[in-house]
Image (tube, rainbow, N blue to C red; front, top):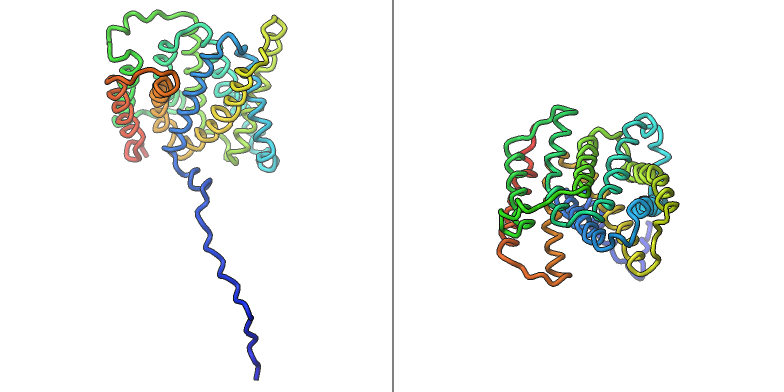
Length: 319
């Protein structure tokens, strides 16, 4: 007869595994895209504030170099595994690096030295239309009526905020070379967004690490030219704050979130979230710059929110 051995002290049962916050976040496309717009709105506000203080090409090159350095320790293992897939689609990867990182970013920072925030926000609000245009021209993907209605409604909300509820202000806007640069940046990013669903099947860290490195390399000659012409960084508190913010939030995190959001719901359903940028931008002006909230802010917020919900809901996408 075997006598069972009874331990003098019972070990406490192991707790059930709790939810993984990162895994949960990676499957929340609407939250990811909203955070992306929030970080990009902060990038515009800070970029405008630092205009003339931080050279645009150098800032863009530092931005993507810093993002690549931050991502590399986490992405190296995936890069080694996914390199054959990335190399097989090298032309597409270079186009993604150029449109989504080099051209778009450099033109945006450059434009903020010449144009007013009102003009830039007005032009950037056309971002979803550029995504739809590229998707139609390249792949024959048409907007559904729900997506078209949602973009139109959210665009009306953006215009309400930008024009401060006065449609007559639209006639007083004068476009300059900075406005043309903003339009070029939006056009380039629309192409990036439309091409993203055709990217090679890789880990998202491999994708973002490759494209940030590609963007930095493409911008390096322009940064060298900028510095050689006598335009250099001013090493002070504003420069440090600007560089730290743009490397972490609108670069590393935003592009991870944006790429994941497109992978989950597609470019046409993700594009209306661009309209949250002027919403967040005006909210920052109220909270940080002391601007007073007005009725047109509330009306604009409600229109943008309604448009985003209509255009991005699951039933609005064609099979």
